[in-house]
Length: 115
Length: 114
Image (cartoon, rainbow over all chains, first blue to last red; front, top):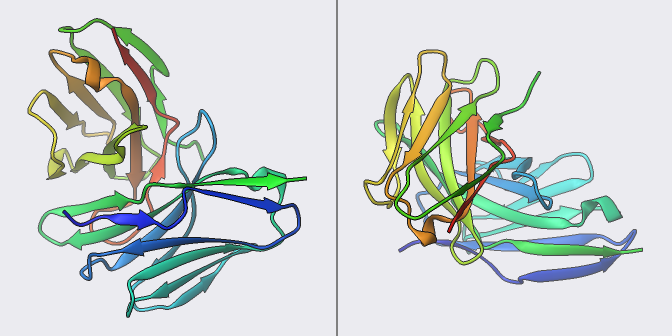
């Protein structure tokens, strides 16, 4: 079946560095993409989203890039902090007007920030 | 504004039993979705409810069911529990359905089946 996959299961960075987490998706019908952060013992926390009619969106210290040509999504975190250590998931959404919507999640990337 | 609330936080059940999990969405959110999270399978979609109607269903057996009430609160039920049902069950809510609005998740119910 179609899936959203991540290139790296783990990423280790130094505090203050920029982090880039990548994601590949395979469903060309997906029109909405979301990045989530999940800390131990908690549910996924919404970070940023992007619609398929955009190729870049910026938030506070985060930027999401969407390349529809190669079906690639990335999350950039500027000046990474220890509090950014978590598992990051990308998710794609196919909205079906008649049957609602559902998220398909990637496998997750464990980001570790070293002080 | 309070977030998505799930109860209970932890549950231990025995094979063959049934379990009911509860979810209160963010105030004003009308769509509620359920996901199962396991180390082996990751996050998998169970079902979505909107206006008390199931709008979408994932690839889970009929032992997994749910419902939504008029106040948008939702419950999911798993009957005849199996060891493989041990997982973190996550509820998420959004304003509407099919409108590309972000899902906001609760902290889940950790179910252990022994």
